[in-house]
Image (cartoon, rainbow, N blue to C red):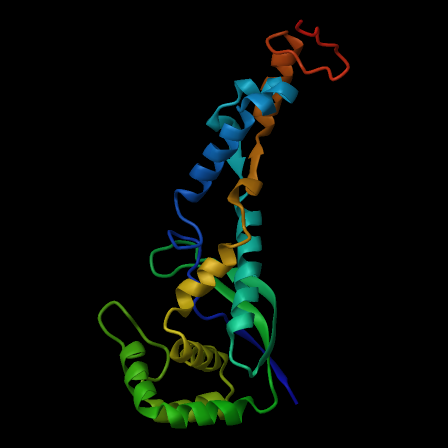
Amino acid sequence: MSKIFNIQIPFFPGFYESSLMNSDTSYWAIQEELEIYLQADYRKEHPEYQILTEDDLDFRYSDYKHDVAEAFLEAWENRAPEIVLSAENPSIDSPRYYNFRNDELFADVELRDDWKDVMHQFIASNYDWLQERIREDWTSYDGFMSFMSNDIDEWDSHLFEEEDERYISTMLAYMMYRENKEIRNDLAMSALEDIYAGCYVFITDDAKERIKEAVENGEVHLYDPAQLELPFV
């Protein structure tokens, strides 16, 4: 029977100065939306927006992160090894401070009933490469404390007897990387493909109140679609 594990999704770069989000993401989204608001055609129907400045706009960070995480998980599922049947229920684990790690993405990943056989075969076929990678990736050093074994021969029990989700997640990552060394960039680009940051820009409540007062004070006049325009002869 297939089995579901809640694992950390490999290759997710997080939202702190990463390919998914950085200090310029909201800035440029706000600049682009402000430019749209101030265009002549837009101002014709919404003249009240002519008094907007970038300080009147804000960015829905939580909505953006949620949608990007879902898009990333979908992209990951589409590129995952065939033993992955589904990946659902994404959740983001964010650190209190970004001193030592970035955001992590977790999801319920369903593996095919023969996932152990497939992983066994992958390990056997890539033993030397895995031995070197595992030793390099999981050996503690000054500034890094590893909580995983750096000995490939110890991974068998962690994977197939204990079914440790950390090792399962990492082995899936090795399987994906072995097939595509650009997998990290491919996933990030795919996740952002259909995400338009401008959709997450909004006019603040304070700005709306200021616009309302400007209209009431006659500083700007709302467009009346019923108003007739005199034709030029």
